[in-house]
Length: 177
Ligand code: HEC
Image (cartoon, rainbow, N blue to C red; front, side):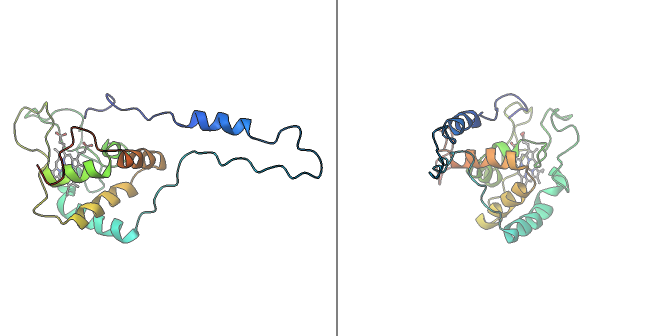
């Protein structure tokens, strides 16, 4: 969960570009013969459109439940990468400067529902409180949509890839905690 350690955006584009160079108009597309259109290049899929109602609801949910710790503009606590006086990591940002965008939807919903603490925190309590008794599934989906509205296309695309991936073995099975 620490910044800069585990993750790196995969370089996916190189192969597609090389293929595109090979299927372009060749020298033997003579006069009168319509050149065949280039093969569609499998590159980045379009991002799913965000529902503005979800984003608006999510922002409202965020301001009421999350902003007191994560900041009114989701900017996180100052010095959020350093443990606080109690030896615990402070609330991180949810905008592009944090790492919320590195987690897929299911993982984010799990953190919001069940809460979390950094494994290196000094104290045992969940510093990120669980919201399962306070927020409906719809509100959790909405707050995640609000986060997505804060991210660059590049980060949204990365997050979308994480969302589409099969669950990691360490993820908690549905229905259990
Ligand atoms: C009492 C303060 C507090 C409140 C309120 C709070 N959080 Fe957090 N949240 C934290 C802390 C602290 C962490 C970091 C935990 C850690 O890494 O040790 C965190 C972490 C997270 C993470 C994980 C981010 C990542 O990149 O790993 C998400 C997602 C998150 N919070 C969402 C929310 C949402 C959504 C709400 C409101 C519904 C909310 N939080 C309310 C304190 C809070």
